[in-house]
Length: 306
Image 1: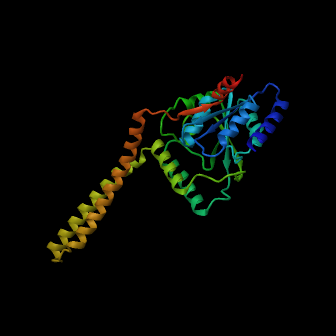
Image 2: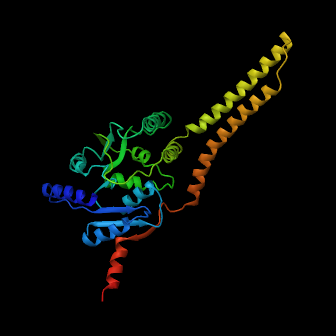
Image 3: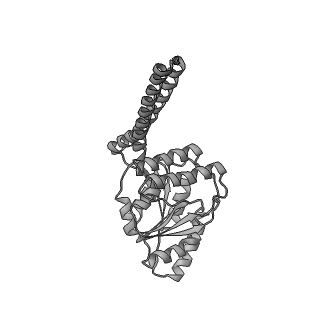
């Protein structure tokens, strides 16, 4: 469905702008269905179709990076293949970017129809928190559907960090961006692979990648807990010396142990998150590994010829 729609839209754009040519680079992120067979079929049928098939599932961020790295054009578009990113918007996006007024045209959802209220609430809160604790502004509802200049893509590719959060990277590199407001579009086929827990972990990736505020929060909690301990000690001494009130033993000790133990574990967890990201970066592992591309398909076809 995506191939039919994208070729239809691009045919219309080429009739209006004859100087345009295009290629489509598919990223097969370790799928276990018949996606790779379909990509081989379309690559044989249409020379504009290219594909990169990973050796396993490396995730959305690795797939986007691989596509940007493999692209050759003066303009590059990132979009989902399930038609949640309407190809019909490409002519409008091209007009904005080709005019020279903008370096990027991106879509922004103005509603969250189809999502649960709980998930929508957490999504809005994430953007609010992220924009308060980070110097990088992330637009609420902004999607990965982006039409970008080669200059902007090269800037994104220069950031070769292993722990990637593209929404933050798109904003961090700057450049002039035009946001096109659209309503939420249901996927044409298939189901989402994003669970609530997966999105929660992804949000933590963004917070850790573009803000050090949690480290400051850990320090602040330590100061507050120490202040509470000193105040409680002073109050206990005054009550005993001035009023002769008996001091409770076991309940007070248990509450203090739980309070400070919880604070210590919480702050240690924050430090652990940053340490884990540093550890993964120091490994210097590749962002993705390629198992097959359309070039391998060409070699196989030539070898099989009599």
